[in-house]
Image (cartoon, rainbow over the protein chains, first blue to last red):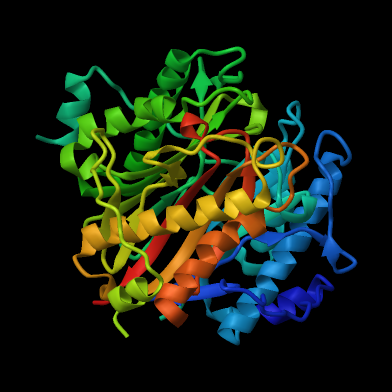
Length: 152
Length: 152
Length: 152
């Protein structure tokens, strides 16, 4: 099934992507590898601030991570023109804004991993590194970085 | 010398590997690059919890990092069938669960770097990024992520 | 224009590079991808210690990140022999030693991103992941990791 039908069946619409006005970019391709910039959690179009284990629950974090996965797909769609060109999601790095006592970064990360797996099937099964960080730009609760392989 | 003879001479036996029951995987190959998921420190088969500079010493951290390097080799052995196919360890990312005052992440990381260098020789000489994080899943003291080049 | 003329026009001279006396290395090439080790901020040849949001200002952090970008270019120059071989800066990972309240990691990172963009033009426009970490080796205020594509 096409990735877009899969997204539709999940009632997901990809948001518009605006390029950063900066000296960095949202994505760069090199050979058949696509690198994406870290995407931060947003709610109502603004950074979703908060710290897991303090202001936010694990469930909030999962929701935030799922939202970032949608934004990452939107960035890949814009970069590639067609998400069906994604051959494999290679790696997610999931950064969780964490109070010192919070140790469920892996459960937060599942919000993104599960969705990518649902949308891309076996091609969405990636390697992953999830951990707690001291802060994230704009106080955002989660940030995710992605590397994908693109069909030749 | 074969990598397995080298492991034997160091009295290292690779543990069995169990695939994560999740929407992510332990390793993904892309071209001749193998990406591994972050592996956390374990002791007696359970997460080795603790924070460097608080509950654990630098020497403990080195031991934990060395143990993770063994687990990473076990994952590569399972993924590749033969560790002699490793052409080069390209990169380690070493995350150390750190109290605010702990600044010896590089010494902790040496526990993994030194072992990979002993086992793989020049092919084990990698680039590295080591730093202190706010937390790690299950409260584990160290987490390591690895990228390797595989012979064509 | 040659990268070296560009550096000269910015009055930047690349410092000498000393290889780490360790089981890891400053850079490794794999195919046409060059991986660099994390480089920490230095001042007067010593680690520039401090925490953003506590001992150091955002402006200090930008200066530190710019200095690291110079060191990263020095490492690439040593590895490649000629910086004009850099086809694209693919990714920066910018780690900022952050007090819990500091949320301007992206502004700190601009110190490196802006310089690479000035020196390499469009080839310097990279993807980026910037966030706050709990500590950095030697208490350094910023650490940056880089991946580049090299001309075939």
